[in-house]
Image 1 (cartoon, rainbow, N blue to C red):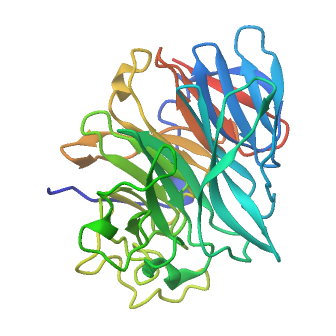
Image 2: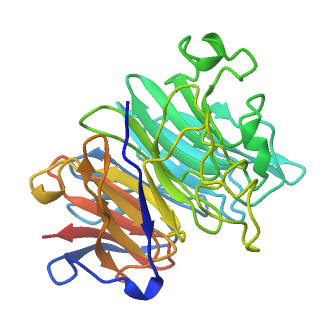
Length: 358
């Protein structure tokens, strides 16, 4: 399948707000401290995480926030903490940096039955080996066809993402109970891969969403100095980190590998940013409130603090359009309800849950 690749090359001073005069924000609730993720329980209730390790529900009608007690051994350290949350069929799936002892942590995923007051979680995945690092946990979750997809970052360890005998720098696919699908690459010709691994060679994938047109899972991935990208999750493929850097360089300015953005045998991203935008959460839009964005991809920028849209063109994406910039801070996550309303959270202290209004 041919896919168009689009590279965004821009300078910081050229940003402008294409829709800033039209977009309005409703501040739904105040007092969130570094929220990381939110998920709808029903049309009136949200469950959300704060990076510090706290888990809450929010009633959108009466604006009441309620804390949920839990048993997760979360280590709030660097980029780690209580991260993605996903509600599905009375169950809560949650990703977090688990304290594994001796200063080590892992990207771990747990499952529990929803309860308003307290949830007992049980781990269904742990990225091994545990590593002493505060960086690159990845940690997004998506459910497709009764499979749970998990992004596991490479923890700042580079070429380890080319080694499929560990979970570091990979996309994971498991059943909803944590068991392993027989269709994973391990069982179809990649005998040296760990059985949970579906794709390798990623750096720090902090966004994931399902294309409503094709049912293809897509990720957003942080490059180093340049090279953030959007690309598909395809079984048995390799994005190439740290052999390639998708147009980026090391933070020192030196080349990554041979300096190539892509090499034969590796999977090409669909959209690449040079320089980096600090790409965060992503979400394909469907709804009637913003019909011009239907089936397009909403993109959150942490570094440049904007929300943008990537329109669909054939099997790829067109030119990025900035919706707004510098309005709410470092945008971390995007969620859309059944009405097509867009909710946003920013990785900031004493911040709001925002709702976009046309």
